[in-house]
Length: 430
Image (tube, rainbow, N blue to C red; front, side, top):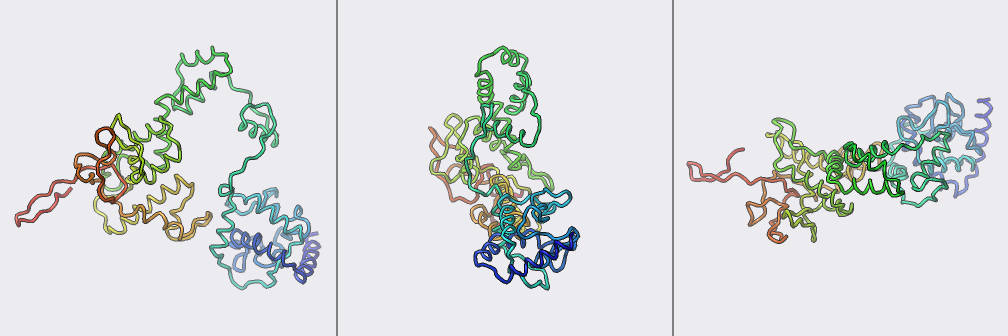
């Protein structure tokens, strides 16, 4: 049977190769070849043929490997290639050890096969093909998280929340029996742990169980969001993202002076329900905002404090190569910022184009000019040696700002200069 399918496929391919339409060639070159190069050639090309399968030219694809012909031109559903891509095959799941390909990519391959799998690659390459970054980027940009936001129709259902309706529809689609609704004590415990990290008190449980109004749970959520414990709990989540620490680690584990200022800034920001776009601006360039948030009660420039995480880098007392130390610091900052705000490991592109994600070596260098040359947090604002950056003067007035060297306000004053026996001045060693 496999041999017959392979012969039939080869015969079909000859006809397709002799009469390729321009539209079919364009479809293959724009939708199919980039995916094959980016996702398949690594294991199925001239040098490596896992499963005795080559996918880098037409006849290799049609001949197939140990499992038989990879495709059946004109019938995508019977093609092993599609079954391995959509994970419906019993044993084959491709690409191996990588996320499942986007639905649109699988749909494009299905359409291509149903068209007869027109393929202009008539000659088998003699060597492996190194994929161009442009081809890799084109494929990786199809990942679901890079697609424009859409507004899908909300499924019908009994649930009040649209989110619950989507969940109920998916549960029904896979044939899972949903759990019974939680009792009020369990519901309160879950909500309290999620929003404050603490268990509810017996009095709070009794109050909630006694409240039979439709708004009972909404009132609980409002109360928890208004609790100071909410900001403390969610600040800890954010501190994990930006790798908050009170010390630098490495040799000696030196302390980061006034690191707590950034921690408290996060708590106040969450409790004040600062809009996320404003919160992001403060984290990236809060010391440059023309209209910063001023905390008049504590006389603080809240926006400037938002950049404090840039100083929380690992470094020791005596780096062997100061330039390498500076590059490593900036690399760490890029790594943290890209993971926190983009969900991407851009730092991998320091040495090479990312193996899985749309992050090339050219992309990684973009943030560097804005956040380079990390310095010791010893600088105070010009004309205000006793005031650390982030503090403001009377009535919320900001003091004059000196030349910006590094976006950081976790500082201490520099040690006073002293005169040597030769009459020259130098700073004390730390």
